[in-house]
Length: 234
Ligand code: IPE
Ligand code: MG
Image (tube, rainbow, N blue to C red; front, side, top):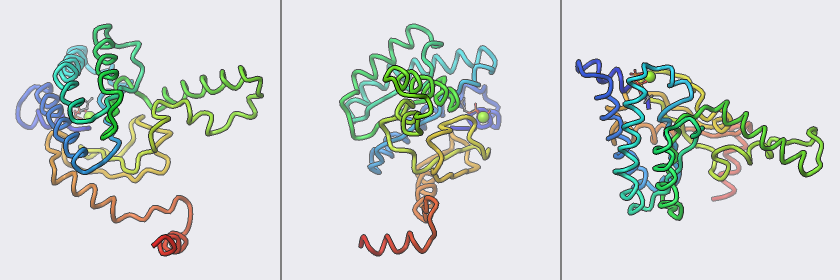
């Protein structure tokens, strides 16, 4: 979700106005994903690198996050949304950690849409943590580390119980991953748009989904093989 600052700048507003508007877009996009029967949505709200921003902006972002959790948890629950926060929570304020725990347990049984919010998340942090956990389990089970497999590591990642993302959308014109779901994006389709996150609307989402629908996903195979398979399953 990139472009909040530039959106505000163009309107001669403080950056926080862009973040506020961005939070409203989050609410709208969650609803649209529910309506479109999308089962998993992961939003990159705050990266492990975002602590480098001016302290005031970091504080405002954390306050906005607090406000959203307080205001939206009940509404998400009523809408059948399961909320999960992924990332290193140990560096978040204690009251924020409590709000997260409460919102997660309130919505834990919902399955209509799983909404993962990445806060203080980094893809490399996720892989390093998963590797340590997988190695510890391996040693505990008396296995050699030589036997450690990709599956062992994948099973310890934050989103181990979710499917890998089909589509990544990055707004705001930048074309990079910025340490998002580094492991999980191996076969994801990428969609980049100049649209700033606060301007991202239903139409912009439809364009992204349309672009995704036109792609042929080969997963290493040839186009002919994919076509043959599609014919066989018809
Ligand atoms: C939102 O956009 C990203 C975060 C909430 C951290 P930016 O704040 O990065 O907006 P730009 O890139 O300055 O426009
Ligand atoms: Mg940015």
